[in-house]
Length: 232
Ligand SMILES: CCCCCCCC(=O)SCCNC(=O)CCNC(=O)[C@H](O)C(C)(C)COP(=O)(O)OP(=O)(O)OC[C@H]1O[C@@H](n2cnc3c(N)ncnc32)[C@H](O)[C@@H]1OP(=O)(O)O
Image (cartoon, rainbow, N blue to C red):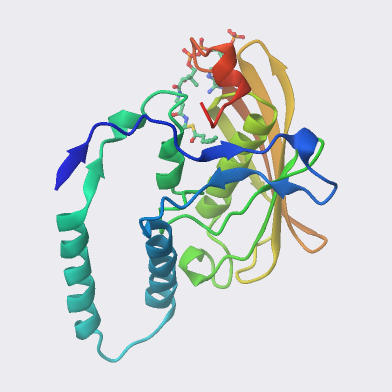
């Protein structure tokens, strides 16, 4: 496997300005497929993940061989991206490998956030057995993961950049698997480098959990980076 050191050029990633969203919201994040098939590959691997975690099998040794061959093939034909290529704000493509929302990461839940005109970010989704914690319910760590991402996106919608410093989740009632879930996050206030944001997840009328978080803007952020927190 070779290493790509030139991953800092312009890529088709970005966000929608809340001002241009209608009442129903507009897709917030743009993570265009790079035409290599990587996004489709991640989609199929998500299916595999759900099937492996949620099925009983008599004998899957043939599948083990197939998947091992696939991994060997990908290792041979791929160009490894170094995390350090994406280590600064303003280099957006790292989003694709994000475990909460990355289009190329098979681990990421099926998050398709929309932004509302008031800069609230909303995501409607269902989570399958691969996200199970208590029987029939979503794992609390997964709820926290989705909250963290949604809160970060709400900051991006409000044109700010922050690292999570403190994240508090109150689990009010179990978050059911396979049920329609609605996550909503919004930025509450900013004081200097401190950013407060909050979020909820409901199934129907039932509040499952809520989150409150403090983010800290990294030192040395420029106005341009603040203005375009994901596009860079
Ligand atoms: C668009 C995609 C969105 C993605 C969202 C994903 C979010 C993430 O996963 S981020 C990863 C997880 N978070 C981290 O790794 C952060 C690790 N922590 C750090 O790097 C540092 O602690 C950091 C940057 C947060 C703060 O460090 P630093 O810049 O030195 O801040 P510092 O100057 O000490 O503090 C600034 C202020 O914040 C306060 N503060 C800092 N940390 C905390 C905290 N944990 N709790 C409460 N207050 C805090 C300080 O008291 C200080 O307050 P004041 O100005 O009133 O004195």
